[in-house]
Length: 357
Image 1: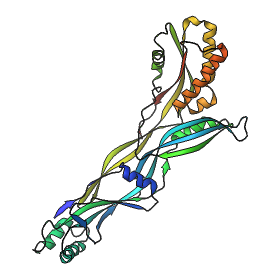
Image 2: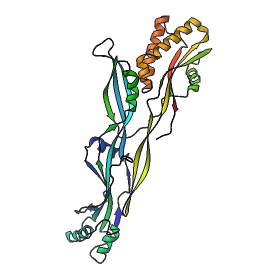
Image 3: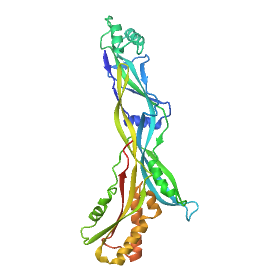
Image 4: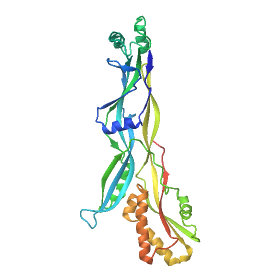
């Protein structure tokens, strides 16, 4: 007798993720490994067990979601004027259940009589009172010389069932909405929602650095021909309502009688954090105090603009692009031209205030 079939199930497999994304509750996906030279017998499998919904230890599939939102300003337009588009990265989960079973496989080319003998012996097995299924079937057929030891075998198989609805983590969206909804002039609309077949842990933005590193980093980004520079750093916004989130993976052992399965499963974790947004303004010392004051004033006004503050903690790249547009437009308006060796940037510093939980 041969014994085949994987004892591991990777719930991050894109094929499983795609099935769970597109399927409906109750729909199932059989994970059965085809064996060359064998076929599945026309006899019900031995059902070993099934995972069940457990609020304390849910079994789910997770994947990344890219969302795009439009922000409208209703101050001067009753229907709202589009003022910004924002990109958010989040994740979705969907709860599943998994059943494990043992299938009988038969070597291709056996006569119907031999196939029936083997199938009947397999069908007489009662789980779990009959003991190990491979021992049971082998002993039942040991005295039949018409059946060879490699004429049949057992194959582990798993079936994934969709057990819940798609749930999208709203942490990033809520963090964006929080400062915007305080001003009744803004509304936010979801315009696209794209599922990925993998979970992606994105690296932090290059402007998300500790506060003490901002001045040095800002000056290092200035052109090499700029000398005698100075940098002013100021904090202009804080946030504590958006916890950090992550997904971790681990193997979980499920022991169904004589057969063991391992699931590569995900766990979502959160921890509290305090976010602070900073503005840096870099300028030559020799341009005079009046010019320095005007540059800093332009940067301050651009940084505290409602649309910038509203998205700086959720889409820093777009916030920086919006800030730069307002800042450099203000400089040209005040001075009639662009100024050399003038730089301003936005930064976010993160301080974690709890452990992962």
